[in-house]
Length: 187
Image (cartoon, rainbow, N blue to C red; front, side):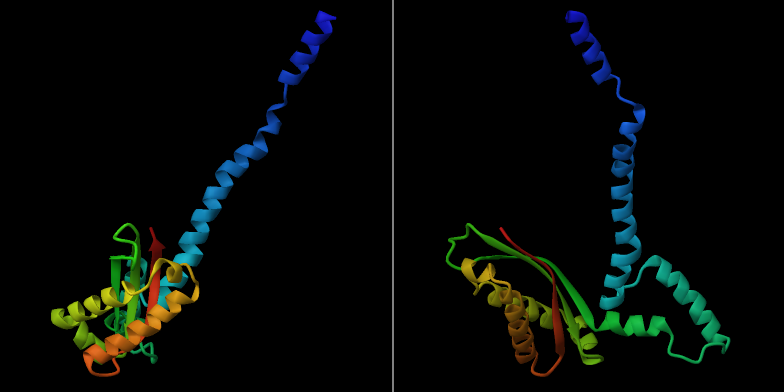
């Protein structure tokens, strides 16, 4: 009887090496798939939407500009389009504000991208005084939300609309087109 129990234990411990193979493949394939998807699908789409440029894009831009100078290309070069979109955006990162009615115990961390109208916004970006005014206005608006409001989905859209209106009022014209929140965290 003791021999049968020891034989059963030996059979259970003798698992074929192939049973670990699917686990090993998944442990390698999942992070690799996530990295590839991020690198070649998600990041290029984000950069395209926000008009950001990568080192690879700069190399392509150099090649395209040389072919454009040679007269091969009759369209507007992409580097000019990207330059224009870079001139009319400003990224404000890691803004921390106290949440209303929490006695400083809760914070809202926000990063946002301001998309302005060209060419007016390019001039505003160069003015430290006007950009400081924009940041100050944003802080005041974001501090006006209490913790219950920050938990609602539509608050972010409402905050963006309020910021556009307030920024344009502060600047004395219609300079801001859109606000994109890239981070919105309540802590």
